[in-house]
Image 1: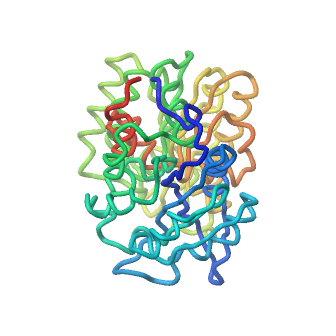
Image 2: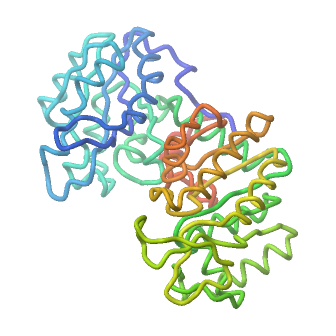
Length: 402
């Protein structure tokens, strides 16, 4: 897919309004505890500034319920943004209105204006066209570099692009996300192994069905595995299970078999009596977990099976942890899979790590530089692999010849 990126234009003398994802975690004193999303956006920002243009940034932060709340103000990010970019950063205490527009219209080349939280207005998430028009007035060009919100048809991610018919581009984050996802979806080297975890089958239903058309192996871990195991007649104790999805999981197993896709469930599990790191743990066959016990991680046999398959794969997609990796007693499954993915990547495999918990696990195990690509958007990547059209991508591609 040929896509319009910022590399295709020189922004000298132009204002670019850029949708970034600065939804970063803050501690009680408003210090940023993880600046990865901000740091990832710097190359796109610098491209425009180095050309001799100026940059107006817009983002959301948190989930304000009804209007402005200081704890969700983007003003808390200004000083760190200046450090990351080495540029002068101005702050507008609104994202629309005459004051904010005056600041953007008079923004000198080489400088940055950060607008206040978009979600202080309900019109943002409602996709209001008039609100989008006011945001569009901040720039000559629109750049979307917020993959984490690309699956939302919000004013700043989708509707605003209508006001830039031929002056819209993807930033480097968006371009990398699309290109890496397309490589896995459309041109995976074989064998292709998908590792799918997380709590619920219902959250991963569509991605599992889509992966059955392209994957050779699907490894299923996390809480969702126990719905599959119960559907096969296993005893899962108090493990997480979606009883209303049992028939559906049987259908998925049958589809995998009909398509020749090898679908692997954990042979054994690390179990506990309660959802706690303080409780004792034991290893049980995943289909024979005693009453009163619950599976909280894949066990040693499952780890060996999964890592053996990973080690011989040429393309790897990991979306969702193998267990409750936040608890040290139940982190071994996710850590073993992460290390195996890293080793396979060193051996020449291409590895794409889904955002959210999978990205958190890769970071927690200090493996960020040992995998091919870590997505910045869990929900967006999931929907991309489900085959859905993402509004934030479609809006930029609309009307652009490629």
